[in-house]
Length: 457
Ligand code: ADP
Ligand code: ASP
Ligand code: MG
Image (tube, rainbow, N blue to C red; front, side, top):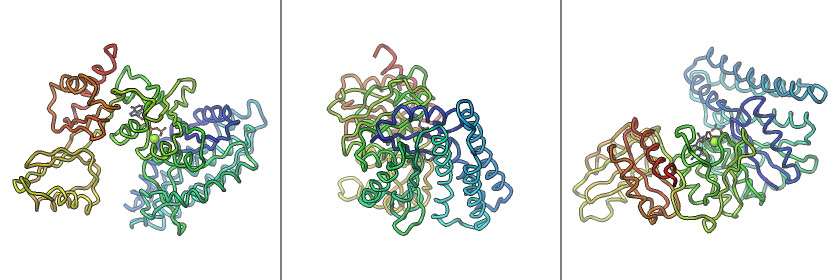
């Protein structure tokens, strides 16, 4: 068995879905379990719909739902046209009715909560409509093209915790259910399609696993099903030396270790969800990152560290962060001060990315999307607090980079014109991160890319 995950751009329109179907067709002998995301941009629109519902904007809600309906029907029409070239035109009335049904249930929830707060379980249900629609369309079209395909509803096996918007899978429960459900689905089919991103509590309430989490669904399913490989199909030629949408002359990395890939994802590289590596690594399942727009490109394989050489592999970034600096002379020669600081972060539910300390100060970075006012208020009981806004984190990632001769010097050289607010070296020797002014970020990444990957390196 293999697990193949297709991201938003790989199912974004009829042409992309067609390419995806051709890619799956090539793998029929491997028993593919296909995990899909919502069509590109749809989850963002659903988030907008949630906000507009709470703001009581009835007309705008109706407008978004109409757009979603039209977009999905257009994909069906485009695919039906391409099917009709070789086969009888498929009857699309059933899939049209399915799209109508999902959009009607969105409208029912909008009306029920207009101008009020939507309960989290209903929010999770609304946000997962994108995956429901894309998976139903893909399954319908695969059958229309002669691929015997079954749909397995992820909410029948992806049991999660009850923190609805960023739920954590209950792995033993997923193991109990997924194998049976997927095996049963394969009894009458050659391909099984399911949805990424969504889950359900033990009590049956809808949840989601957080933004970009379809990668995580795929890796977890791969682990649970003992897959031979996990393939993450996206819109770039694998994991690259930097984000190809930001830097020219990037190149695909042929292979990278689980640890390096996880560090890259944690430090901002959007190409993989940060939690998507561990399940594959736990069973040593090779995880491939491939381009559905260019399926013949080699892509990247993520493997055990013993197969990977030392050195810088890629540059990642987090564009909008804040640095919280805590100064306190009380810190000098006292024990337990750090514990006090991090207890406050824990209590406020704010997670910290980078940390750097000196004798009388601690600096940490947090994502700019996190509300920090209550945190800052509580921290100020411990000392003076300064928050630096509009900053970016840039990280170079690679196995044992600190041990690579000249790497640290090369970083300093490349950024000598920029003001560095903070610097930290991950304890794993996998990462060296700096914080710069946000307008400087792209420039810094490009300079670092030149130094590490373009001068014949
Ligand atoms: P999908 O919708 O397929 O899940 P994402 O948009 O989540 O795709 O992830 C793919 C994107 O990740 C690429 O288009 C690219 O802009 C971005 N990215 C960031 N860093 C890297 C990197 N080091 N290598 C490849 N892509 C990267
Ligand atoms: N559709 C979801 C999102 O946009 C999940 C995913 O694409 O991985 O966040
Ligand atoms: Mg993604």
